[in-house]
Image (cartoon, rainbow over all chains, first blue to last red; front, side, top):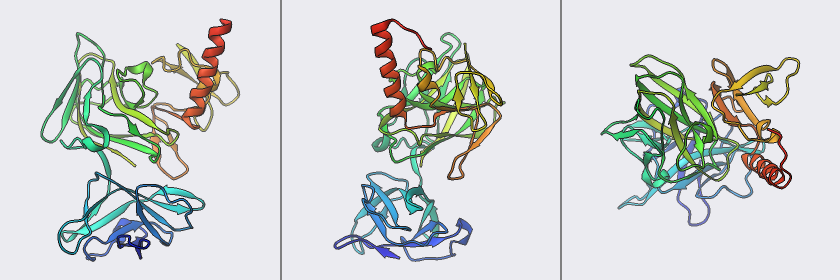
Length: 246
Length: 91
């Protein structure tokens, strides 16, 4: 499938039932969409298509993504797909998608943080929201709640528009003191703490040395919110590996 | 600490009833919130899971709005306005 209206970029996209069905090789920048619904028209644009038909795919374009596609045959003309949705049964639903380049398939993910990369254009980066210590390293950042304060919070520098997203996900590594008081969530407060974090998923109690993932349903949020962490316990340290939205 | 009651879909209710499981708001997340605000939330308790319509599975403890959040904000704002003018209490 290739798409775009008059003057639009040509984007090749094919449907595959699952990621294991992606072929061993493909054309440069070919898109593999994981779906069982046949692809109709592909719209690569910033805004949600106004009058979609069943099977249409919306490639949400932004100014940052984990994969930039160079669409020029000579020189550089990059596009930044932030996420993919398909119009199925009267609604836009997220679909996984992959791009083929460098002799391999690469999955599109809208990161807010990934192993040292702060994705500043998307969320402004990460900072302390109140007490606690945020330390940034080359491939991770740690958030630390110390015993003298007993509470800490960290958040995105800027609010993020959650309108088009349904889920945020955190992958982290436990260092110490993970006792069920850690929270990963959504708030409008610039100084979040447990009672004013609007919605959250708890970081479950765990021993040190465990990599864990938590996900939060944000499908009911429209508009601007901080993504935040809160901690309410002495001597808790968590190593943040990646944060994504989809 | 406020006690809420959860149904099989993990939606919050403010009064006990058949088949509803009590849940304590230890964080005080719903302190000062009106009934309509509270009952607009889904609370997946620790150890439980909830599967969204698109098949995504969420593990508790997770607290998230089950209806558009702006509706809950409007209900809470109306409650606070009434409460201020009449001095009433609900939550």
